[in-house]
Image (cartoon, rainbow, N blue to C red; front, top):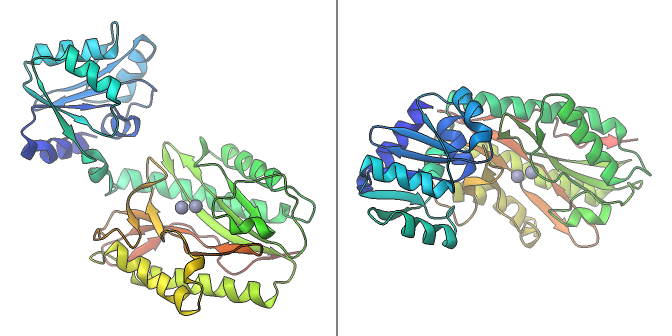
Length: 356
Ligand code: ZN
Ligand code: ZN
C-alpha cells in the first residue's frame, strides 16, 4: 500500500498540488486497504489521512497502515475542510469524475482558502499495472470462476431455466470463497444469445441451444470475468462454424498479446479474422477490457484505444458473433500481460462442450 501512495504522490507532482482528496471507493481501497463504505482520503506530501464516521473507526485502524484515522464530525466535508486548514494546504487535487456538482459546490464553500484542482483518472492509471498481491487475488477469483464452470456444466439440461443456472453458479462461487458475483450473471440460450448482455431470464434451455455463459467471482475486492459457450446436443454446421471462427479469433488475439503492442492492434488481430468471414458487423463490441477492483477498467482492447500494453495489466479477450434470431457465441478469457507475452488466468476448456 505504501508503494501505491508513493506512486500517487509522484503522479501529481507535476500538477503542483500539495494534497489530493480521494473520494472514489475503489481508489481509497486501493491506496489504504480500507474496505468500509464511507471514507475520504487526504494524501499530502507528508501525511496520509483517512476520514470516516464512527461506525468504521476501528475497522479503518485495523485494515490500514500508515494512515492517520480521523473521525468525521458533522458532514465529511466539514472534517475534510478542517484538515486542509490545519495543514495549511494551498492547492488540493480532487477526482473530477467522482465528485458530483453538488459536492464540488460544497468543497468550494467549505474550503475557501485552497485552490481546488481537478485530477482526471490519476489513480486509475496507476491501477492499470497490478502488483503481485493484486495478481494473486485475481488469480484466485479466476480459479473460483473456473471451478464454478466445471460444476455447472452438468446441471444444464433441456427444461432448466437460465435463472436457475445463474443462481446455482452464484451459490457455488459464494460457497467457495467468492464475496459476490462480479456482475449480473449472463446466461443467454438459443435466440437470446444474440443479446451480448443477456442477463439470465426465465427462458428454459432447449435441445439444440447454444448457451452463452458469462460470469465471474469477486475475491477480496478483485473481479474475474469469463465466458464460455456450450451447446445442448450435437451442434449443427452453422453453430460449429461460428464457434470455431470465434475461437480462432480469440486464439489469434492471445497469440499477439504482449507488452509493446497497442490495444487497438490486438483488437484488430481478432476482428480481422471475423470480418474476413463476413461477420464483422456481428461483432459489435470491443475485444476486451481491463479488470481489477472494478469489472471494467482501462485500458480496453478496442479500435479506439491506442494504449500500449505493459506487463502487469490484466485484461479480458472476448470476441463474439451475434446473429439476430439465431443466437450468439462468445469466448472470453482473463489474461495477465507478462514480460514476454501473456498468461491466461481462465483455465476452463475452450473446446465446444456438447451437453447431453
Ligand atoms: Zn464477461
Ligand atoms: Zn468481459
